[in-house]
Length: 110
Length: 118
Image (cartoon, rainbow over all chains, first blue to last red; front, side, top):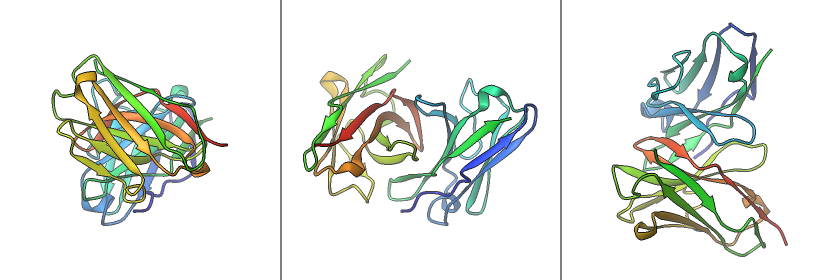
């Protein structure tokens, strides 16, 4: 069970859109529609932003969206705002009642 | 609204056992379909799922930690606990407890830093 692969960093200007990828295998991301995404500001606990690949919890802005193609899931943030600057982590069900996280992506809003 | 709070020693000696407790408030630990998980994060690194428990006592563990981890639940105290034995410096991390509903984690506790050092 290896960590999912995410880019170390991405950046964008306010108002722009960015996409963070999360690559796994057919044993995790590709095998199940159970990818979730978490936002983590410095010193804070992670916050659920997307679950089941593309569903948004109540209270999460519709600027956040998720998708999946094959073994790669993606988180897209549109209309970037300064408050979106944070670390983002993907997570996937990996079978046998286990879960695996990605290494995290630092989003910088320029 | 359910809230979680971790507690336990912030310093553990190498080879000893790390013990943490998560207290659930704002709801019963036995209600609904929640599982209760532990997740950790070494400084500057990513998240690692440790394991989970259902209120029936049924557990699932990360295969890489399974030989050293025990998660238990005390429904009378609305708490669940983590024990990690034979710790080394590599176990130094912020430890989070979280509710896990089906295949996602929410809500989360604020996290507690555990340092393994002599």
